[in-house]
Image (cartoon, rainbow, N blue to C red):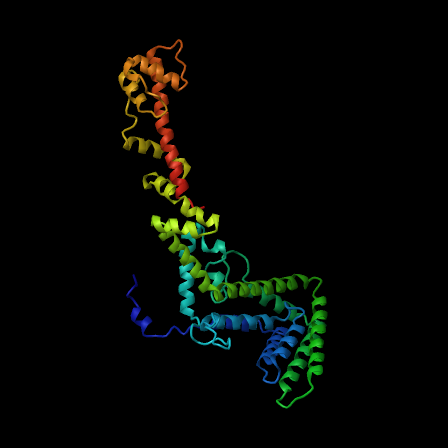
Length: 415
């Protein structure tokens, strides 16, 4: 049910989804050498002269210390969030040349709906939360959902830790930091100077890239001792956190249609199991013994399922047994002195062979039932025998209910 309050303002406006909040946070990291890594990475990416191979090779060379090349992985993260927002992370269907077309391309609302479906389907099918399978909301959309700007505990958010580390290092004006910035600026100026008719600049490009890589190594070495080592460690962990998150999201979201199909198919299979003929057909054509187990044991599980037996914990099992016994009219014999009632109850116990019982007296029936149940009768009066027999029969009633409870629990437990 949708809430009507503010509904008109919703439907009469466009949500204008964007990653602006992430961009704003990233902009706060553009300090000192970090700002220059952003500039160089953008210059290489946007250059119209360099080929894709030249761009990739240059970016690879200067990324020898990825935790210092913050502009590179932040730009990659922002580009990733844009593909989620415009749906291109789920490509369109390829045409005959293999080039993706718009037809079939994903959309942000499709991604949102798919993630919502996953949150409800996984607990139903697997008995665990979506997060336990790496499929909660943040496992798909964490970068857009402020994963790096907020934390649920006392630890610092990733971006806060990065900013403070960058500010601390920059404030100390390390010589190798200055040299690294110079190398970044020199390469940026060179890339920006390239024009359409430039020729034979590959060697020069390589020289500038190597200079940046060398300066990055020297800068990294200078951070290997305190008071900088702790900050460098935070830069490394921040880099890993962002890269791992983007990798996870790319994997989850780009393949989300296939994953949804798998969940949907499994839901369909469980529905088909209700039809005996289809259940039999599926077990015959399936070659996977583990897969077939659900269907081959389906009848037994249904037979053992009884909503009356549902209990949350073992601690209330005894009370539930008492409740079920009472609803069944048990114990049906309240006094062991009532020998006829005890004898009659004994004849209804499946463990006792009642052949020839009609020819026996009530006392003889009780004695015979005791012997069959290995209850000692020697030296005991008929009333003692009756008491021990009734206790045994009543315990048997409880044991049967307990067994049915266990079978019900087993049938109702995901496995």
